[in-house]
Length: 62
Image (cartoon, one colour):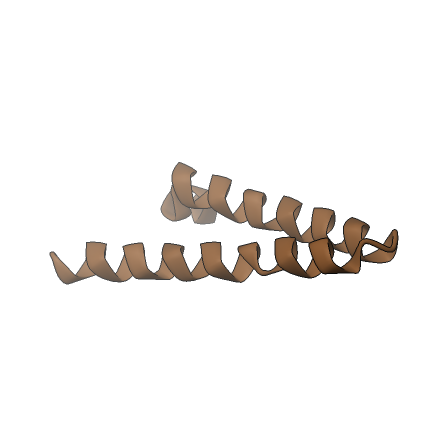
């Protein structure tokens, strides 16, 4: 529980969103709509990159 408090609500929600995006992308890919599956699947790493960037900007100010 301590880890989730340290992680923060916004980061936790963004990580859950990434998990949902990955599941939707896999569903699309496996049901035959592979182009949309790949397109949606690229959103998760992009969102994780934005999270890392925001964390670096936040830590640079301290």
